[in-house]
Length: 147
Image 1 (tube, one colour):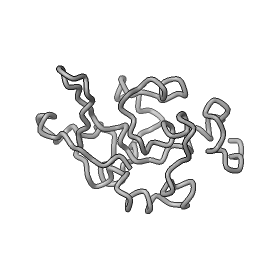
Image 2 (image 1 turned 60 degrees about the vertical axis):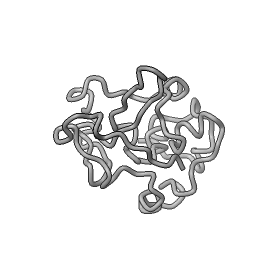
Image 3 (image 1 turned 90 degrees about the vertical axis):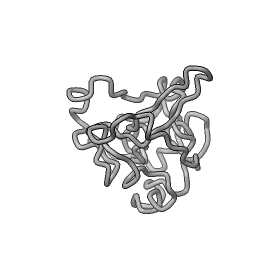
Image 4 (image 1 turned 60 degrees about the horizontal axis):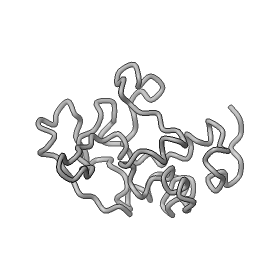
C-alpha cells in the first residue's frame, strides 16, 4: 500500500492512485441505494432501499472486496463512469471533483471522521432499508436534499 499524497482530493481524478481513489469516497451509501427511472420523464427517482450488502446502520458495504460475487451488477466507479452516470448525488466527492468543485466541508478527509457527514444528512446510515426487507420498491421513493 502506497502513501496517500497530501491533499490528493484536490488533484484531477485521473491522477489518483487506486488507494487515493478509494479514500475519496465519503461513504455516504447513496450509490448503494436502488433507483427507479420515471418512464415518462426519464427522471431518476431515489429510494431508501439499499443493496443487500449495505449495512443500513453504518452505510458501509459488508463485503466490499467481494461485492461483485454477490451483486454482479454492482458498479465499480471509474473517472469515466463518474462523468456518465446521472444518479450520483451532488454531494458525491467523485462527482464534485469531476466537475472541478471542492469536496464538501463535512467530508471525512477534511473532518477526520464520518460524524460531520452523518450530521449533515448526506449519509443514508439509519435512513434506509435492506432490499431483503423492503417489499415493493415504488413505496420507498425519497426526496433527500442534495447538499
